[in-house]
Length: 316
Image (cartoon, rainbow, N blue to C red; front, top):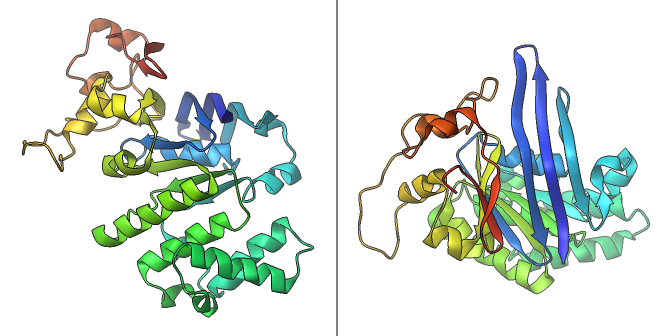
């Protein structure tokens, strides 16, 4: 069952310097109880894609395309209707828990506030019982609900942010670099907690990350973004075993293998393009080792190159 469908999503920022094409014609589907990994270099449009789904883009940004959640076109909903969905049906774990949590309010009060926004008739006793339950589910002692964010460790802050996103029982959670600021051991603990909660609650998730090991560990499908474009989409096992797009292959070559033979890592030469003036044709062609003349002139269309997946590359 398809829970979320994004078709021809474009998010442009109309600035005095010109039009920044942050997300340019992106399409994908998210099925029920599926986890999708959204990967790519910094500035490729991963976070902007998810903020667009949540309709949290502020002027001078403008969203075009179709975003459908359970047959509802999110672009046609009123602000009030979208507010009812945001946080309750589609929730987001923002990057940097210390910045996302309010430093002057207790953790438990912040989680309770989310309940009151979406369920104004809930009693204080029932609401705080749910706060204690959701904190317990992410491995935090309910007594820590009285603490302020600075009294929690980095890992506990991240868990508290996960609890805040879960308290209204959403269908979809989007996590923006959920473990990027944590040490390796805490990363592993948080990822195991996320995976366990996802399986137990039947959640669908979108994980935004540049760490391919996170995608390999907890995702079912992978979407690779480059310079505002979705260049490859498919099952994890297919993309990690046989990447089709040269950019996907380059990303995997730049990442160390934990189980395979020791190999010299390969850098991706050059830098991502300025989205004010992106290159003509395929946006990766100035850095691509397999560039052809057509790559410089024509933007590649999506090709159904494998089952349950596609790639945007003239090689196919």
